[in-house]
Each structure stands twice: as C-alpha cells, then as structure tokens.
Amino acid sequence: MPRHDDREPAQLRPIKFSRWFTVHAPGSVLVECGRTRVLCTVMYEDSVPPWLRSANARKPEAERQGWLTAEYAMLPSSTHTRKQRDKGGKVDGRSVEIQRLIGRAMRAIIDLKQIGERTLWIDCDVLQADGGTRCASITGAYMALWDCLLRMKDEGKLKYWPLIDSVAAVSVGIVGGTPVIDLDYTEDFAAQTDMNVVMTGKGRFIEVQGTAEEHSFPREQLNQLLDLATQGITEITALQRAILDA
Image 1 (cartoon, rainbow, N blue to C red):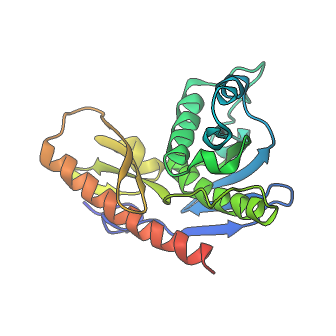
Image 2 (image 1 turned 180 degrees about the vertical axis):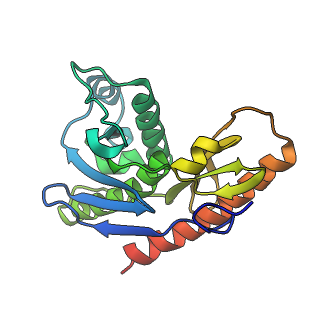
C-alpha cells in the first residue's frame, strides 16, 4: 500500500535542526520533522530539588550529583482545533507521560555527577503537530542539551564532559498492513499498530512503547518494526552528529 505522501516504508520525513533558535536559553533547537515543529530549550540553575539536596548532604562531595528534568507542552494553535492551555498547575495526562519520557531518555545518556549540584531544565514546546511530537522532542532536546553543556563548559561549571552517548527517537507502525517509519498524523490515526522507539547513538534501547489498536501483531512484525526504528535512528544520529560537529 503506497503512503499518502509517496514516501517509501523506510523513509523518514525531511528533518531540519535550527540551533540557537532563541537568545536567552544556553541551548535551543527548533526541530522540524515534516510539518511537526518543536522548540526545545535547555537552561540550568545552580540548585537541586530539596530531596536531592538532602541525599547529597549525606555523600562525599565527589559523589554528589545534579538533576535533569523535562516539561512538554503543546501550544493552543499547534493542532487543528485549539488546545486549551494547562491552568492552575494541572497538566494533562498525555503531557505528563511525554515529559517523563523525555526526562528518562536524557538521564540515560548523562553522568549527572559531572554537572555539580545544578538542575538542567529541558522544555519542549510543540509549535505545530503532525505526528511524532514526542520523538521530535527527544531528538531535538538532546541537541539543545549539548549546546547548553558547551556553555557550561566554557563557564567552568562542569567537572568533566557529562554526556556518555547520544539519543534520538522515531515512531514506527503498521499502516494498511505494511510496517512504516516516522508516521505523520494521518498515518498515526489509521495505524493498526503504533510504536515509539528511543535509542542511544550506540544502538542501545532506552524505551519501546508499542500498542496494537485493533488487532494483535506477531513477533515477526515486532522485529520488523524494531529493525525499521534502528535504521531510522541511525540516520537521525548521523544527522545530529554532522550538525553538532559543524
């Protein structure tokens, strides 16, 4: 079954990264995956949450660590119908799930002992949604984190370089009986199986989120989807490295 945008099953949407997109955040990247656009920013503050401060106080100085956390939100005009803003400190369940995923993904590839007793704040704001916003957020957040850490290095705020790997994410799924990669909204809506895969640059899995919508799927299709995701994340990782090394 041909894809509605004429892509091959294993073909990613066009990806673009714009570094230093905002002025005030030490790290900021606008990531564009097809028509999905997410602004990822990273800032730091010279303190940690109270629970970590207490834990650090019981450790030798060399063992004390910082913290990294993430927030995710969709702007009201990011979807076809206006999305209400979160109010009164309440965040919708989907946003909570995604920001926890982003935080887990970033903490898997950083040694927080090397940043001192500081907190890294990652903010991912969806400007325009057309499928794959959580994957775009993770992919862009890594690059914004890199730039923030470069600033901290220049300011003498790091013990050693803290990143131990890179991270990227992509969606895969079964659409019309065919395994495909990087689903947009139209494909995601029609998918029989939908999966998000988060991997490191070294090819290790951080998270696999997969759901069958109407029918269960066999192990061989799971293997096909993971192979597709691995291929796509390898491509994305190469693009990340080319841009960060430029």
